[in-house]
Image 1: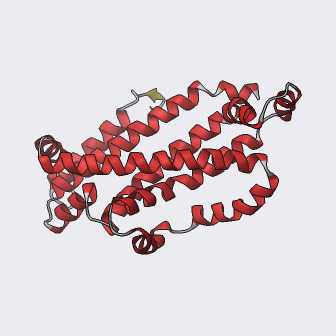
Image 2 (image 1 turned 90 degrees about the vertical axis):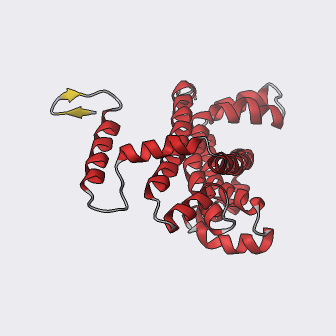
Length: 250
């Protein structure tokens, strides 16, 4: 970050926002925003509790399984759409519809079809992530140089070999970009599922703390959620930068 011509360290913006948060909290302008110091103290007191650890495990399980399913479905479907014009014309309108539609409206349908348990939460998480992964994988395949595909065909590569040795690796930068955005959307999906379908995990903690006006506890859980999402997103962004040379080689 550059201010008045001076380059500040990378974490300066977080420090500035933390100071502003502390000032607003100490001023007592609203009970909704407690001081950051109080939130951090509350967080350390919560980490060792059974309730927090159970909620973290339930949320992590639904998130990881949902994102894993979205990746396993989204990448192959996106690559196949990029390869096949017929499949692209059949599926692309539906992918765009579900990407732009408010998926929260589908939650009651999922509750009817799959019940009120963890299965519906996982499916909700996957639905929030899978569509952007499909679109990015498709876009990556569209950018591949046709000479790579023709070369593979001339050397007798099977469709399976072409899929994993040409299409996947050449489209990898866009695929990782889609996964990164999908992970961010999945965080929203898992919390919505835990709030609307079955009040478990972090959703149950949010419900409990907001209902009892425990704003320090509420913000502490929210910080943990944001930190986890940010860490995963930055790791995937790092992988994107590492494989960016594939785009040049195309």
